[in-house]
Length: 357
Image (cartoon, rainbow, N blue to C red):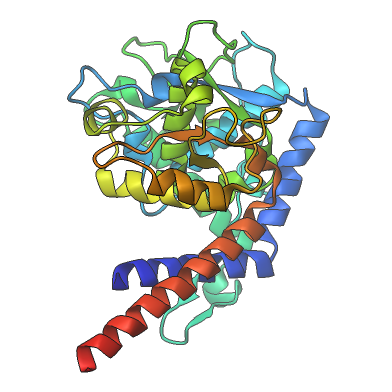
């Protein structure tokens, strides 16, 4: 519980700083510029190969290998896909047209909170040690490229980007190439990213609403939450009728073997996504607005009855609620995490009181 309190507090602190310096607002503005100047897609099509097991059921998916406590590798890949589909039609091959840093660059697309000094319990000025906000974002972008390239370590065809080397074997980050969701491939010529069509086959592709990128959700959700959310989107396409009628669930074997997610990451991801209004406990038609069966309105009380009526050992069933994406991610997350912090603090105070009684 102490770890939960501390991690929630760190996250609140980070969100507060990002809100204060308007870094999410700036990233949203840059992404909206790409969207408005481009094709203005309502949603982004993602090949579900990113979530598929690698080389058999015992190997983790590429997505699970991007659920990391630090870095922006998963965020970078999803934002690169967003940038590609704002600019290119289905079937077109990706080429890089953005610089790594400066105005209108990859670095502009990411929000950062800055460096935190634990001793003084304050965020350091960007000028400390010659650092600037742009320098920090550039380092994060370069780190993301190394991570995405590193997925191919030992098995080169798993890499999600290809970063060429110079004469002295230095990485030429600016010349990186984006790969398909299944990785670089095993041939000499890399499997460079091509914008996919929304495939008719259930589960071959999933759609990510543009609001996920334009309203800051891509910036503030943790990698485990993004991975959990994407898994639910895959499930909702695998079984669309069941998703609408009674919801979908993930048993332990599927969570581990198909999506490669640990139990604690999955359960915490489900809880936070519910708090943020991006998924909900499943409701049969008639329990909520029939005309808008996936509305998150008036959900808290109904969620209570759904969860309390669940039979013992019966798995929780969920439905995706895309209307939540229309809200400002920073405001929603700060509100819900502040409420959670109060609950965690109250629980800790009660335990202290009980131990001294």
